[in-house]
Amino acid sequence: VCRRLVGRTAVVTGAGSGIGLAASRRLASEGAHVVCGDVDETRGKAAAEETGGTFVHADVTDPEQVEALFRAAYDTYGSVDVAFNNAGISPPDDDSILETGLEAWKRVQEVNLTSVYLCCKAAIPYMRRQGRGSVINTASFVARMGAATSQISYTASKGGVLAMSRELGVQFAREGIRVNALCPGPVNTPLLRELFAKDPERAARRLVHIPPGRFAEAEEIAAAVAFLASDDSSFVNATDFLVDGGISGA
Ligand code: NAD
Image 1 (spheres, helix red, strand yellow):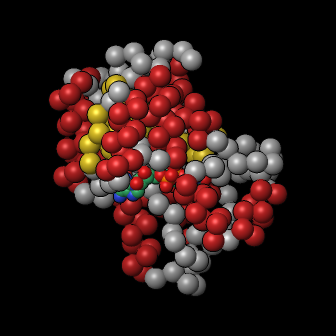
Image 2: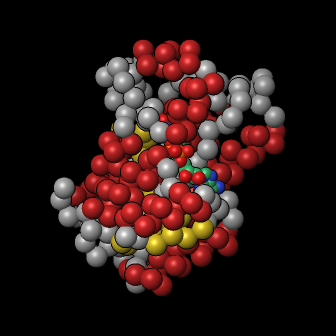
Image 3: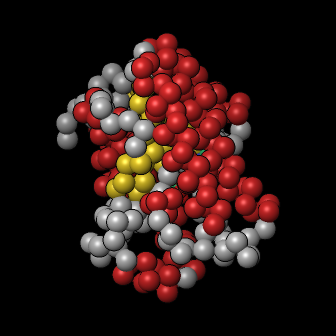
């Protein structure tokens, strides 16, 4: 592994599991100080311990906790170079527009979209002062295709993440800040396993449509996160960065 992030500080939300955990490991292995934010204390602490980083209990829907997360990064390590705004949820039940209730819809927007707004709002002021920063917001391939997943609130929230990332990437480019949306395809994480455990048929249907015929491993997404975090991606900005095995193009 290369060491592209020595001396940089990376904040990761949802660091305790899946993509966030794999990214925390990868960013740390490339030399970054990792600040692991999660609502799950046990998993978040374990991630921080393993990566030699710092755990901050942060519910990404809470503005004060989000501010405290980025402040802790700055206070502990002296900069906020990378914000991997990744925490998100998948709706528990059938989320077809015909079934989903307004409260469930609002909850998904809050955790998946408002959270990204809050994290960007908290991170960008530090990056402006430094004249440097990379923001990576986890969206999903579903925002790029009619996935027929019946997950309307999820798909809409991720579409919002794409649009917001593009807008911010354009707005702050002259200040040395890049903002990209990361669009993973289906990844073998607890989130996906839970979804498919309830509906194995759905897993089988989904597999057929993934060109490589398998789900991604979280480490394959983490490799893209490290690229986007590093100066190797210095001219990559305001993109929908697809790491989806070609599913959205198929
Ligand atoms: P995961 O469930 O394995 O991990 C999510 C982590 O986020 C958990 O540690 C959880 O505690 C944390 N979290 C949940 N709500 C939070 C909150 N309010 N505040 C702080 N932390 C919170 O999920 P994952 O598969 O690693 O997904 C990570 C991101 O990737 C999500 O945004 C998800 O929508 C997106 N994504 C996942 C897939 C996939 O197939 N797994 C595909 C595309 C996009």
